[in-house]
Amino acid sequence: MADSIDWDSGLGSENGIKIILPDGSIIEKIGAVSAQDVKDVVRAANIKKFNIKNGDGRLLTASDFPLLNGNIVIEEYNEAK
Image (cartoon, rainbow, N blue to C red; front, side, top):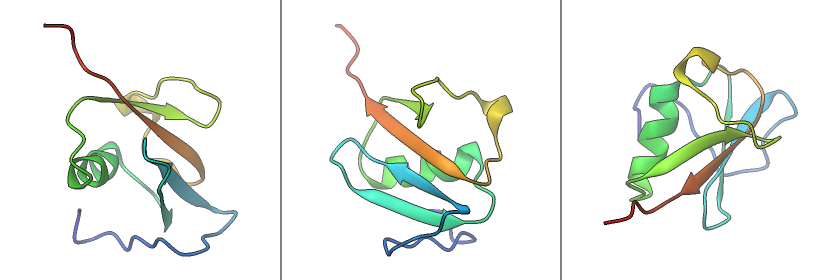
């Protein structure tokens, strides 16, 4: 997890970001969240392959960041061998 980010698993805020992990856990942050911040949280959760989507299910790309509010949904996937 990025040391410069104050992450919280508490109640959160309407003006923050909620990162929803595949296991249903939610990580919340108030303030700007970069793509790297999201990757750090996901990797700390031991998820190797994933897609990052917004609350409406749209795939997010690096150009969509930083985000200031809303939901980020992490979808884990396994590549075919």
